[in-house]
Length: 515
Image 1 (cartoon, one colour):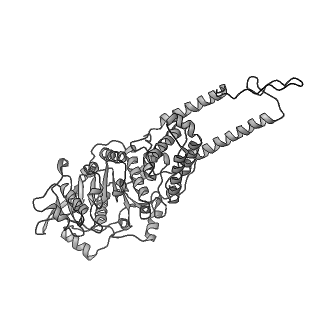
Image 2 (image 1 turned 90 degrees about the vertical axis):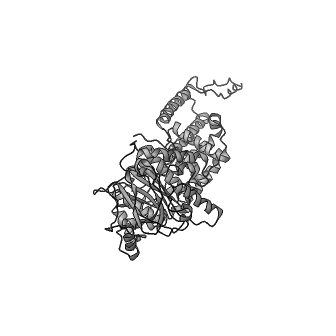
Image 3 (image 1 turned 45 degrees about the horizontal axis):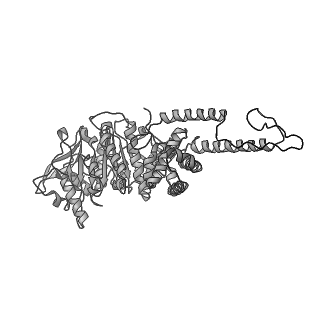
């Protein structure tokens, strides 16, 4: 059985299918990351549920996505069912206690949980370009846009801020091209059209304030259990790129904000990335390299990242090498790619002389898996054929009424419900355009009006022509700045530079917040 230092996963079986020993995940290696794989219907969601239960009981907060709604049952106490009681006896889970777990529901659309948001600035140009599937040239313009926003002190909080900035860049394309490289109006227009599609898909709900505070997904209860943050993702999965980008942003925010803790006795947070293949599908090499870097370094922040997917081939090799705790459910091997996946999965385990790993993977029953976790000194254990323990919470989804009651009683109720729309790039650029328009109108009125009041040396003070003579020709416009213009631009540059120096972007392009 599990104790205060481990999580009970299940019981391994001997070659004659009799009980062998308990299989556990040591909490001290919980931040060494993990992988849960297997075909649809083989029991991955239940494995995720019992791992989340174990971490919560150990006082470790958990964040996970609920793709089908089944994971919501962790918020309710389980009930004794024949097949669950039978499995508990098979793995010698005695006593088999039922319990409910402290859950906070989140939803990017604010329908099945508390609204969850991020600002455009926090997302950064790299992740936004990935979300919008921009070309290299368009990604370059996005980077220029963020650079200009930093220099000119323009806050990018929501989609209308980014749209206003892009419109401003299109108007100043010639000036900006001279400073940063070619910026064309057609490319800017293409980005704006992509933003419109993104807005129609519901992304406008995600960008804005109040932004998610990392501390709110790292809560513990008064009795010492870790809160389980469950992201309702059934509707979100209609836009897989938004889903993957959001979770990657959250992982990068954890990396940027949390302090170094080395190797703690147990993780500070465990992050489950379900449908992990969406993160890497068609991802550029630079993004994959940075994900690998974050996964490798976030361990020292006390965060364990667990990828959940159907096929181990879904995870790039560099990332796969970082995942120490592994649970492999059944795979089917009908096509060449599926056969390759089976071989790959088998080769990643420490071999067990009692059975052939590749053959066993194709023969595993539902709720059965090959398990290998890190033992003393971080060495992978010999792979074992394991019956996964039954969950203590409800198996299956909760009702809408139960969900609404839990949301109303949540510790973050009311903190994210009201959207805040403070002055940002959209309002600042509008004000700047209005000021410019007013100044132009005043200049036109001064040039055509009856008043001849002037300031010597600043134009419009040409002498009246002699009687019967012609007025002297107007001087040609000069490209040189007036003293007043130069002074104003100097002030703007100094302010912009100080803002730019104060803003530092992190490893994935998001803002590195001051700690």
